[in-house]
Length: 297
Image 1: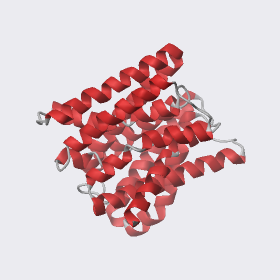
Image 2: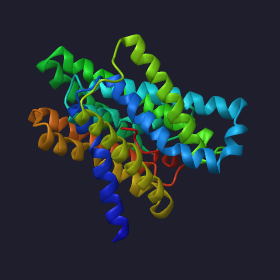
Image 3: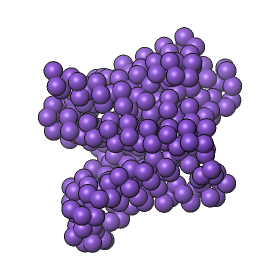
């Protein structure tokens, strides 16, 4: 019962990410900066007091991996949050969740053999993307650009997962997340300055939304899933994370009044089926372990 309750809390928390950020009247790069900046501040006491020696000794290849992971995370947030301003929350969330497929694709390029169900799942998932993108193109070019941004965001999230999994073999979770989120925030701050997106001057309500998305998706959702990985295993967590797609679509309908066309919803279902096949087919494998890093929405 406790596990089911935690799963429900985690799914709702990450599902709130897209709708809350889409509802915020804050520039997309600034949203990405502040949620990482706030998370870094929240992690600072534990990292600097309990992991001071580890942080001081973080250098060379270990530091390079963490910083590379932070750069991939910055690209993920920059493209995915931007996609929310161009297309629907449902489409953006479904396409960015293809990070699971990109991780498996990376394993394929490295020569790993796959069961037939995994290959079938990849084909089905990407076919679903074509359906969603085709529907969005029929509506506007802006929506198609949003889909492409979400696609890049998924690739970047996969890179974050692969690089981060290597970094965390020798770096504690606290130190890793503190440095990763911090370096990500720095890069996003630079991006905001270059793009001319304001980092402040927002109404109080907007600051509240930024704090809420940090507390839910950035901290609570991922913390719960990271706990459940150790207690329930990667398969259940990976499958439950796919519930973010319908969860975000439902919450976007309730909060924003977004109702994607029926054909687009059909594409979302196809993506979910494909990703479910991929996760199920990779159960018990090393690649499956890499899939359980929660999507950083």
